[in-house]
Each structure stands twice: as structure tokens, then as C-alpha cells.
Picture 1 (cartoon, helix red, strand yellow):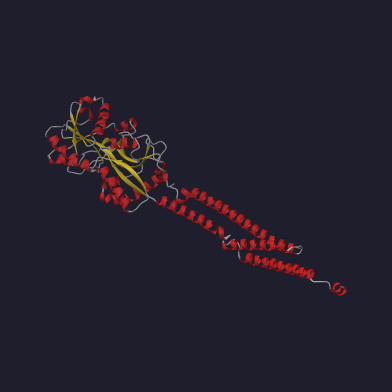
Picture 2: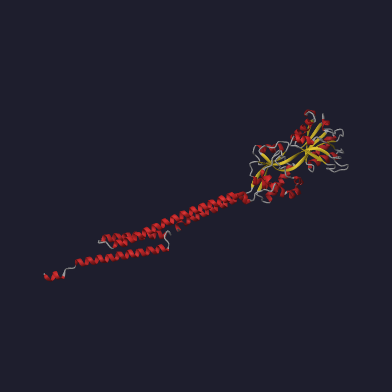
Length: 442
């Protein structure tokens, strides 16, 4: 038994080491690549704040930013698999391999002018329209709006303006007749556009998109947004009356292949950290849950949906099957080890009993030996048995009780040999002495 103790200990240590490695592997944070851009945009600032917060609090899920030129490139990075997450815009084309995690913010399309005669979208025919930020995406959105009102795309001229601080000067100098910006109503870009118009002494005119609800039904990526009177403050209030326009949503999407548990944890962390993030990036207050109904036009990742519906699995629910398999494997290995040890012990006892039977055979054989050479051979066999017993005792294969049994058996064998030798010697001596009667007769 003692000889097999190192094997048993080695097996136990291997199981413990495997358990520790599994625990370490499970405890490693999952780092997800998130494509977001352009640099300096509100989306980039928001995701950078999220990544810093997760790293600072040593969460199970971490983010690594992959800078892009805008939402179109972010969507392409996710589509070709170079990003696990991406910040995309609902009207730019969400990759088919991704699903929504959360809505980061909703943007409204603001058509602004300083000429009161521009009161509706058809009035933009033949005009120059300045595009603030994301020129490619916003130009496509403008073309969709113009097409709805039967205004050809080539009937207007689009001019990129960069950020919103250039809008007021461009309107005042006549470089553009109207400005299109797609921004959160509480975002920095919309505020910069209106502030730049105010600085140049202009009065912003909000061009409504009255058919926003129709457009939203026609293109599910769009939505109808109501801009209440005085949303942007000012005296008189801006806008002077409640207007309707179209909007889009900026979404954090994840590859469908990412484990549900990882996405559930990321979604939870987004909403748990939202108040702290809003201190640094006010836009974080706009993070909200997407439509999780079965009729939603943009699918939601199952992991995120589980969080929203309160069905997130606990650690043991998630890995319960693995724990069950591990316990079952350990039980099987333990039973196998016990069987092997038992068989080894049985074989060891069988060998010990064979040696003891040989000693008993020597004791019985001594009674019939008539030759000194045969007796010497039995004595040699007893010595060999002694050597084998000592060797087994040295390796721990024979315990104290076994040693005592061998000692008793060897004593009996040696006593029987000695007694038989004495008898043979006595016979030899008796046969060598002369007969007294025969000697007297002579």
C-alpha cells in the first residue's frame, strides 16, 4: 500500500492543479475589441470612459478601443470580424453578424437655416446644404429625405462643414443656405451649431420634417422624433413651436457569436456605471434599453435580452453542468484509483501468502529429508525467502503484522531444519559406532 501512496498523491495533486488552472482561466477578464469613431466624437469619448471605468474597477469584462473614421467604418470592422463590438448608427447599415446590446443615444436630424422662407424640405431645392460631421452618413440620410419629397439628390449641393462651430459663419457669409446636423438633442454638436448661429447674429429657423412617422414606417432604421418648444432654450424659445423630425439611434452592437454570459455582464456594467459615467460624459445619461419585443426590426443580443428581462443565469446555473461533470470525473477517477490500489494490495498480499506457504512447505519437507544435501537446499530456500521478505519490507510492501508473520515462519523453518539436522547427525554417529557383542565374540 505504501508503495502506491506516491501515485495516489500525484493523482490528487494533478486534480488540484487542474482545478486551480480552471479557476484561473475562468477568473481571467474577457477583453472585447470595440470599434468606435471618429476620434474626439461623443461616441468615442463615451466608450473611452466606459473602458476606463471597467479597467479601474477590475471587472470581468474589459474593452479595448479600435479607432475608426466613423460609424460606417466601425460597422465594416465588425462585419469583417476585426472587432467584437461596434458603435453603429441605425441608418448606416448594421452588420448582419451583430446584434444590439444597448442604445447609447438617439439623434435627431436638425435642418437649420436663417432664411424664414425655408419652411419645408421641398424649399431646399436648388440650395446649398452644409453637412455637419459624418458627411457620408448624413448625405445619405438627406438624400432619403429629399427623395420622399420628390426632390432629386442633384437638385441640392452638399458642403461638408466639419464640426458645428463653423455653421453660423457659413450661413452668414452665404456659403450655405441651410445646415443639416444629426445629433442628440442634449449633445454637444447641436448646441455648437445653434451657438455659432447666435454668435453671428442670426435667428435659427427649424425646418420640420412633417412626414417623419411615415418615413419611420418606410425605413425601420429611422424613427419619428418630436422636438418640443424651447428644447434648446433662448428668448424667444428655440424652436418657437414644437416640430417633428426624423431620428436615428447610435447602438452598441456585439457579434452574435460572443457568449451570452459575457454580453449580459457587459450590459449590466453599462447600466450600473451609467451614473458615474454621466459625470464625465453627460451623454451617458442617454443610454437605454432597445426594443426587446419579438417584432423589433433590429434584433437584440440574447445575452443583453436576458439582462433586460431579468433572466441572467447565476454562476452556478451557468457552469452547473461543468461542475457536475467535474465531480463525476473525479468520482470515476477516485473509484479507478481505489480499484487499482485494492488490486495492488491484493497482489501484494498474494505474494506474501505465497512466501509464507513456501516456508510452511519447508517445515513439512524437513520431516522427510534423509540427506544433508537436501536439508542444505531447504536452508538455502529459507534464506532466499528471507531476502525477498526483507526487500519487500524495505519498500513498505509488508507492514508490521506481515513482518511478524514472516519472522515466526522463518523461526519455525530454521528450527525444523536444525532439528532434522540433529536427527541426521545422530543417525550417522550411531551407524559409525562398532557393535559391542560382535567385538566380545571375536
